[in-house]
Image 1 (cartoon, rainbow, N blue to C red):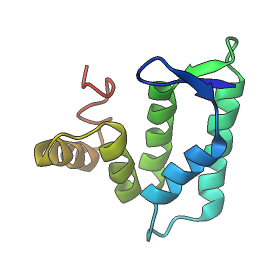
Image 2: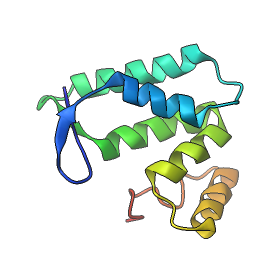
Image 3: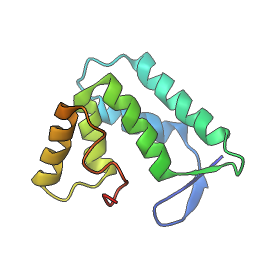
Image 4: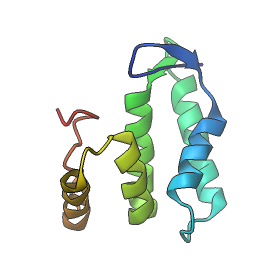
Length: 114
């Protein structure tokens, strides 16, 4: 199972990296470890189910964000701020406003906002 990075490099899928990102996003939040393990399992299955046996990190990140958004808003924004590479406070505030409105996010089109 391979993942395609932003720079088109390919590397083996590593569930530990997914769990690491989830744990970091959920640090000091009331989120059960079991819920994070389920998300990591879903991501692993998503990658494994691809006919080409590879998936872009963009799709993986979007899936993680959807799951975190439903689980814990703070964890979602933490993850999104790293994944979407917020450039400034305004990017962060846009995401908070979209979370408050219940929309899919100011940058829902991808890392570059398209």
